[in-house]
Length: 371
Ligand SMILES: [Zn+2]
Ligand SMILES: [Zn+2]
Image (cartoon, rainbow, N blue to C red; front, side, top):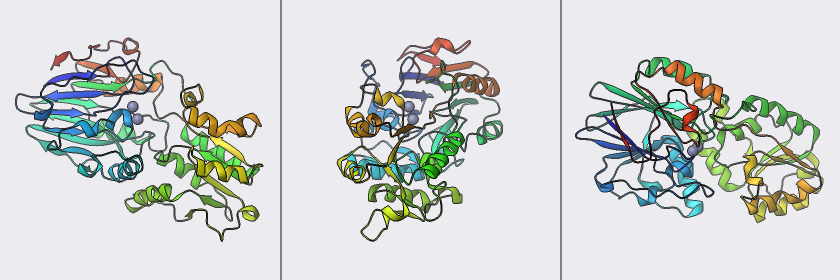
């Protein structure tokens, strides 16, 4: 098998991995670069001859260039992830979501002489996958973005022990290879519970596609208090619910704010995005608190819309930061490398510090590794 990282050997986001045999060529992810990343051109030879593209998850830095893939190339994403992405794409007028073919966890797909097995990954995107690619007696595990400190992280060791016990090569994300352990999703939920117990009107700014966070919030809203979101968010939650494998991902009491609700009397927790409609709701409740539940980096001058949206609460001391990263810290990344113990080594991607992986195989973008 020949492996080439077209982009992503030394940057976070915009990753494109190619795996090829004599007769078959696939890509894993075809993402857009993050806005602040130094521009790196993407060149994929004979792009229209690619046999299939597999997306690990629906974040823009992995699926963002979907529109640029020639329409005859089959593209795959998790079944529920595809539904979520369709809502997101419709809102932002992105094209190509209709062509996504659905994958189910642990149901392999054959493309030419390659077998691709989607293995569930815990990430801040729902229904994300690692991929185990096997061909000609060789196997490669591609982690995509992942973490172990979410609600589904504990399943990772069992899944890998069972489905990827002996891989030749591990392609591992390294976003936080230099990063220390932060809050777990469970800790965020415990903190949220306290905030909600102490405040009657709570707005929470979080990604509409971070389903695990939304589930965390939903399940700590006490009896009698409303859980509110807008129609767009509700559509997403209903898509998740339709294919939910556990009651944790059901949201039967999620409401959109209507005229007949007794908001002042009963209190509420409302999932919001940085837009005018939600800003108006927040103005109506000056005594509310705002929980900022996203990457803190957005408040460092990168996202003026978000900064403007939170300003009032931030300046009046009514904003609370509660967040867990979607990425594994260094110690968990190294533990994964140790447990997977690939025969040939670890190829770091989606990182600014590939050298921080001990004995990592550090390729440059566009270089080919033959295994
Ligand atoms: Zn990413
Ligand atoms: Zn991601």
